[in-house]
Amino acid sequence: MSRLSDLNQQIPQCELCPRLRVYCRQVAQERKKQFAQDEYWGKPVPGWGDENARILIVGLAPAAHGSNRTGRMLTGDGTDGMGTSDFLAASLYRNGLANQPTSRQAGDGYQLNGVYYSAIARCAPPENKPTPAEIQACGAYLQTELSALPNLRVIVALGKLAFDQVWRLLPAQTLPRPVFAHGARVQADGQPVLLGTYHPSRQNTQTGKLSPSMLDQIFQLALQF
Image (tube, rainbow, N blue to C red):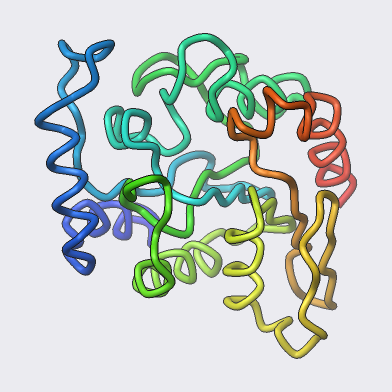
């Protein structure tokens, strides 16, 4: 098996963060009324996508009723097209990087083209807020993915926490610490280009802080690299 396949079998067995494991199991047992009939994943969520990817998308953490339910990264946190997963999927689809504009559940036919999904934390955290120690505990998983994607050219970080953590894991730390902003770019010889974007959360997309065209511009820039 590939290094990614090995890693993706290890991640769901992880017990490094007791607080997160308790929370994920609790959510999986109690469930949301909308998904009461679903069998929740309730475990750490591995990365997913095209193992020949040139673009790596790094989010914050699985959503409690999204990836913690579906078991597939950046999937299922809304069925109205406005959740993070669908907002992101629609942009990838418009830019030829996915075969359909929705990412609702494992087995829905959604496929990524040259893209791999990951996150800086693999368990759904209470209030979507992993602690610095919990992010650090997951660092080795993301580091392995960075080295196991042989064609990687661009990393798109969704939000400041993801942007800062990816920068910490890149040898480009020798450069001045970058300031996060939408469209922020870190580029060093021999390293993947790191691009920052506002996180496609409902808070940002429904207030207009992040529009579809703004996210499209990030992926258009990624495609240039």
